[in-house]
Image (cartoon, rainbow over all chains, first blue to last red; front, side):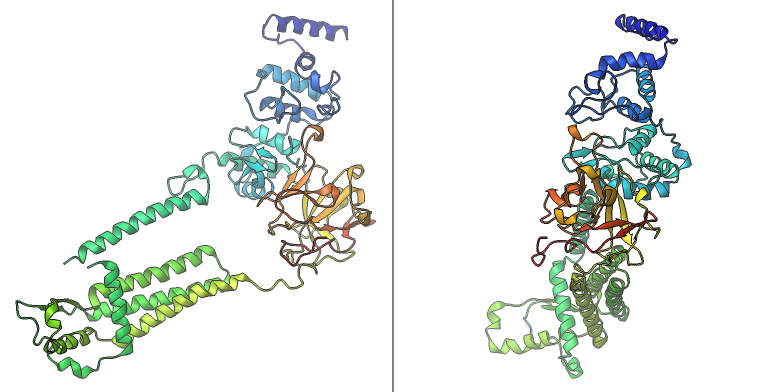
Amino acid sequence: MVRARGVAVAALACLAAWAPPPASAQPAAQGRVLFLEGCATCHGDDARGLPGQAPSLHGVGARAADFYLSTGRMPLAEPRTTPVRAPPQYMAAERRALVDYVASLGGPGIPDVTPQRGSLAVGFQQFTSHCAGCHQAVAQGGVVPDDVAPSLQQATPRQIAEAVRVGPHVMPAFPESQIDRHELDSIVRYVLSTRSPPDRGGWGLGNLGPIPEGMVAWLLAGAALLIVLRLLGERSRP
Amino acid sequence: MSLPRRLAEAVVVLALIARGRRGRRREEEPVDEGGPEEGRPFLREVGARPGAERAVAALLFASALASVAFVVVFFTGADTQALGIALAAALGLLGAALAVAAAAVVPREQAIERRPRLAHPEAEPPVRRRLATAGEGVSRRRLLGTAGLAAGATLTGALVVPAASLGPAVGNSIAETPWRRGRRLVDEDGRPLLAADVPATSFLTAFPEGADPRELGAPVIVVREDPARLRLPRARRGWAPQGILAYSKICTHAGCALALYRRPLYEPVSQPPGIACPCHYSVFDPRTGGTVLAGPAGRPLPQLPLAVGPDGELRAAGGFSGPIGPSWWGVRET
């Protein structure tokens, strides 16, 4: 206990001096310091949450902490604002410390995801049935009632896997009984594949789907028809 | 000469040929007698070549075949791409037939008429004769006429047939669903659903055991709520064992499949849970018996009463609370 307090004091001193945290500092203890500084206003000093402000972090595990911190959704300036993707506010080492601290309160760890092990076909099928309703068929994001489903184009495989299990904000959380590990790998592989889609026609048109494609088809076909008409008319002129 | 005019001429000539107005005996009559005096006032090129006529007939019959293919595809599976290809082929082949006919079958004529002389009675007979022989040089008239009729009639048929998509009368299917008391809920693979399978953070889609899952009244959405937070109507006490609720998956607005589930991670700072439709974003409240929270839906989502068997299996405890499916004037609010 005395030693931990000593380390905490040392860490505080380091922070005050804007020096990088010493490698020897215990991450969870350093995370506790960072937590008290940046998170405890809403989540409470003991991380059990404050009613009407923020939920308890006991039992949420490393996956939720890593998701919210690495996507820049936390810390929030004001508890009632909708968390959106932003540049992370903590450096990688600080995030690790905070995640270790939240993990020390219990809960599931960061999901293991290996997109290469997944199947693109299974991923497409699973993404279509579970995710595309809100996030759109090629993961460009969309609208949900009273909210916005973010695009997944910048999310890392780990963040996608964490979001599936955590269910951030108003998204449902999918347990292993609904999306197993292989299906999760496949979903992530599918999302990654949407970043360089095979444009068969050579022109993706932003992969927005049939409406711009139909418009371009009409324009091209209309122009081609006009040319054909003109040629036919030329030939029959006496 | 403009293309539309030539096409129109081709159609008129084909129609004339089909009616067979001119007899063969007129072919012997002189074509150009007593015309205007200067130069060659009347020029006539007989364009018809047997090959061209055969080609036009073949194109017209091919167009007819494509129209028939449209009807066949429509009734055998209605793959939209195949339908589009068939219709495009029918119209394209018809257009090609008309273009070939205009270019190589129908005779080209150039006549110079002097208006004042037309007033004279003696100038009229030769003009009449010339008009009467307009279609000469076209042999195989009956073949072309039949082919034209076949193409036109089948294309008309192909355009009329999609009216069958308006579908059969709904009848009683919205009130009589496959759900009966004691019927088990199964997943899409036919495995019985256990109460323990229903996650607290997501939703499941279930079907009645042994029934056609594609029937409008078959699919239900199953969600789990905190029993303490349920605000079901008094008459629906006991419809949600362990807080598990089932609602029809068909939106009461336009009949889309409800596929969105809003599940707040921390409710005090976001929104209550809701079942939403991806088509027009109607949101239904699972806690209050499917009442409309937002959107264009006009009546609540029909709820299916549930019971948990001793083996933990979910079973229906009766039929839906109201008529399922999209709304129209005949559906009373329940």
